[in-house]
Length: 434
Image 1 (spheres, helix red, strand yellow):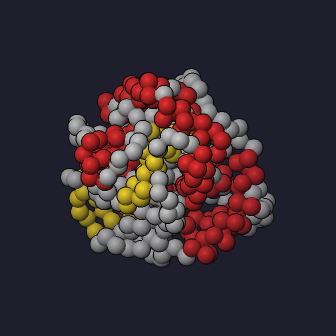
Image 2: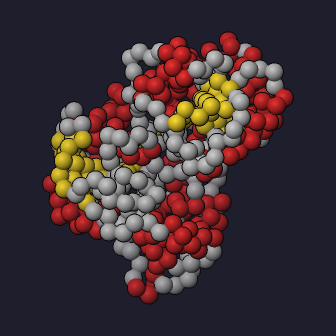
């Protein structure tokens, strides 16, 4: 069997998000079949600047073809386009323009995929909202399997994506909440889909004492891992933690790992370690009282799964349906809706070690049961086997010139607001539409 993987960025040093997800799946499948990755020369998702050389190469033994991005992102123009399609009635053409403004614009990748798609049994396309996935799904519709990695944000409600969600061969969802949201938007229940997510590579041994000594972590601490960004809920996290620390007698610190896109408060109980090695990250994670994920939007959160795999509980933002659902289904996490609830959660974790350890044990069992690599691999191969005999749906053609310019498309934010929200407690179907 031969599999193509399409993703907007790809590299051994790209350490998070859909791109790491794609690399893990590529390397997992490459152990049993021929895999080839089609991606861009971009390393940075904010600029899409070409940094890798174009052409063929390998990453960890997997063949990779890279194609030049034709233009970097103009942040101001992209912001203007986003406000237009998210916030008011607009045209389908304006959504297409939004897609091009977002990028990464890479027509040669799509052209190459169109020429060679027939050489592959299936084409896995990562991240619904990006140019390579949108055009790649249409170029290889009869073989396309979508991995949406979709968060609950207005972009997923754009009209241009609904035919793609209905026209691909299959969909590998990250969570029950993601599946419920996309099915409500696209009415694509007949498309074969399975909730699978992705595993992680946890070291056989971790050394929390080594992390405490190396970084001088003398007190118990709450850990944040990822880009330190207001869009990730970090401004609210800082505010809630500073309020907590001003009134609590518990010696709990906040430790941050990752690059900063905002100022980190100069506070005696807040430590920013910056970018660290994978070894250090897992050591620090194992040493933490809990991991905090303050993001409002996630499609899965790989770092939450890593925390649970190491037996550490997760503290999640109540506004993130996916994380609340994961906390409830695993019985391995707590969540907060405001500063008072945040303080209550931290006090419980700091003063009830038996509860903290029980949550951690539940998390470890949950990850083994739901996100072990053998489980992930089995779900992919079951999907491949079933799609070999399933009828291919018809991808709806894009609207014509006049239809694209009619101002009749509702604001994406309004459409998303109509979609039911909240955690989904039970998976009532392993693979639907088969």
